[in-house]
Image 1 (spheres, rainbow, N blue to C red):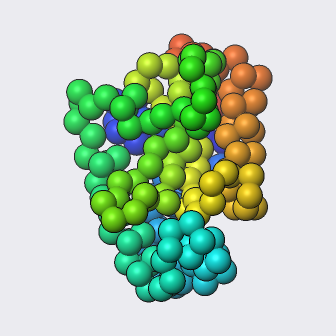
Image 2 (image 1 turned 135 degrees about the vertical axis):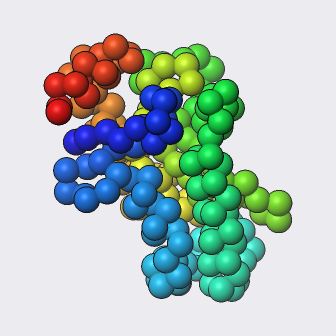
Length: 182
């Protein structure tokens, strides 16, 4: 497991899993812009799309995803130095009321016509600093309802446990880990 500095100033990171050639953020934006992949995904999850978003057209879902992904990618990659990532990322559990060590977080795309189903999942390393562990198209109320979102929960926990086992529970520990990985 390696970590890529996304914004260049150490506030936004993405995991590069050993089995992948690129980090998860690059993989997600590539996937979310692949019309064939999106067609397969929405065809396989059409019942959730209809039930939870009242969208019956796979083509409409693809169009909305392409647009949302482009906007989310621009928002992530064009971060100003004074951007407040704490406003972008929110606790994964909507009922959480206090900060946790390596808290699990989410960032959503933005939509006007219906809620965005695009999600980025991250661990909060400290105030304003996040490590993206993955992402998904979430069409259900909870992540536990579908295998692809359940897998994202597993990845969050796997990375969190790895960081804790390496003593990387704050930025000093995280930087030490990165230095030792080189």
